Image (cartoon, rainbow, N blue to C red; front, side):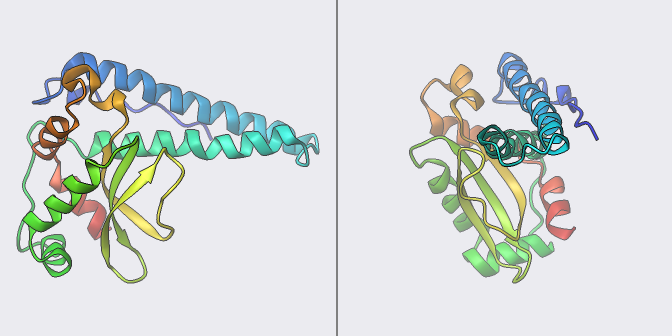
Length: 194
């Protein structure tokens, strides 16, 4: 199976994000898809040739997680943005869960903003524990360090500089505020209810 680049040009014209920023971001995403396919092919060759004990195989295996997660996190990120952003329904299952865990939607948002404002590059992932139903805002360092095993990503915020530097320079807080205004809560709730 080959991974295909998805088209997210529907995001052009998104308030708070320039088309040039998205064009650059899409090229980066395309690289993750391409590299995931290349590494997958290389791993198949190494397995077929009985070279799974080599240091090259081990390095490719490690790199695969980086590229694959980079691909998937970008897809989740792009898909939880919308120019006709919605608001979360207070009576929805997710809205009730946010109130239960965080006390209010405003408290959840403050927690997400505080997590996103931390120094460093990476991602903030609002996720659900598939065993307990608990929800968290977590920091994922890079692409492959910090994921909580057994969780479903509900909302993903890209906090690598490429996601905001072109439009916001070093004003990450302004980017976060713009991000919060274009969340596609219909998509987020769909992920929660799945």
